[in-house]
Length: 601
Ligand SMILES: CC(=O)SCCNC(=O)CCNC(=O)[C@H](O)C(C)(C)COP(=O)(O)OP(=O)(O)OC[C@H]1O[C@@H](n2cnc3c(N)ncnc32)[C@H](O)[C@@H]1OP(=O)(O)O
Ligand SMILES: CC(C)C(=O)C(=O)O
Ligand SMILES: [Mg+2]
Image (cartoon, rainbow, N blue to C red; front, side, top):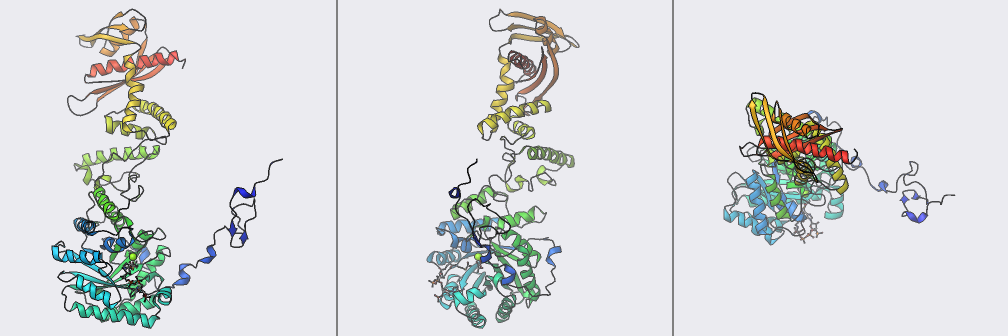
């Protein structure tokens, strides 16, 4: 009789309806899983989009870049264990400028001395180019607003960004104000900002109803429209209403509906820049931002590579490169994405993971055989089409399978595109041999060699580098030219058109040397005839050769498939002389055939 499952083998699981009995299946449709999902309320129960918001966003396309606003120096910075010091802040700011961002949130000047001093540094050092606007952030408190304005004195173009949470839980629990009282607090701060701005030219205003996505839409509308009027927004001095998904709580279509509702209801629409600020709690920050742009957003706040509180702000790099790969100019420079990544990693002291879209170490890499095959064919076809059209490869339309972006567009080379392990096939192995060693193996040899590589990769469980690939190839196909059978002191001569002589000395272990001499219609047929004369019958079944590089000194490589007795084997030779390479290829095949015979294969 079999032993019943031990109740102690698994931790006791509980479902909303009680504990799972020992030995019962972990999932049971009648009982539900052990997760207490009943504790959460779906987003649509928490915030209802008013009926009649006929959606237009689902059928729209994004055909131009929104205004991007990196908030790394404020929102990203407030999420770091070690907030940026002035040097790191400056480095990040310079990166933003170099990439082409025209508006950048540079800090929360009333929050810390470092932030205040950094804004003063920007004002005093002339680090802000004429076409760049800096944004500073403040809560709705008189002292904080005063400090904020003190920080920007002398800066010619600024946005002062006021925020207050507006959602019911925040109103009730955090701020202790009802709708009317909170609106009064916001407007009191807005009046103060307007007054301070009279003494500071070039200031524009931004307002964020924090947790917009959990706030009643009619209330946000009431507050935002009130500010549009209070700040007397006009097309030449528009107000920014920034609608954050401070904590992402719903599928992206819900956010899109919320944004479209605001887009269509906001007053003085041509005097309002509708901005979004998605976070990434559900991992759909990018989708939220994209759908929000379809729904009418004109400006997107986020962080490079998605730094920010909890799971981060929306990743501005992914958003921009998503546009690029749809044929829309992101209006930013990503031509050296690795340098951008290094700078961001340095400033944030956080690594960017290997699978991060566009920039991770592995995101342009294929290990799997069929993908490698498709990529190799795609790259060859791309090069062929570019040559046919007479344009540089970097300008030709891109349609390479499995690669949504040409790695060269963002400063990556093709080195990492194909890497080999036990999941790889002949296409990828051939690609690596070609790109790293100039070898273009005949198709049947490529297939045969890939089995050797597969065995090696399976045995080690590790990746096979291009160097190791070469060593395997050398050991399997090139080295056998040196024994046990060798031919030394050989030379060939053309005795008449189409008539060749081969002379040499055959050496085999333990046997006296044998002089070889025979004729044929080419040097290799003469060699085969000479070996036959010494009792070694060799049939050359296939032969190929090519140069391994473009210069006159680059070695040639030859491949020969020979029948020696019953064995049919490939051999390869590599030498600066094409003739030597070909003779070595035949000898390697013969020795490999002898090896196979001696192993009884
Ligand atoms: C979603 C976001 O990213 S919002 C930005 C959040 N960023 C940060 O908080 C980073 C920088 N912050 C700070 O350095 C500090 O919070 C400061 C300097 C701004 C204020 O510090 P303190 O005066 O110590 O207040 P504290 O940090 O405890 O904030 C809580 C208080 O602010 C109030 N508050 C919170 N948000 C706001 C707001 N937008 N406007 C006005 N008051 C606010 C709270 O109701 C609470 O008031 P209470 O003390 O009367 O209950
Ligand atoms: C824009 C501000 C308030 C913010 O960072 C957020 O709501 O996430
Ligand atoms: Mg935020």
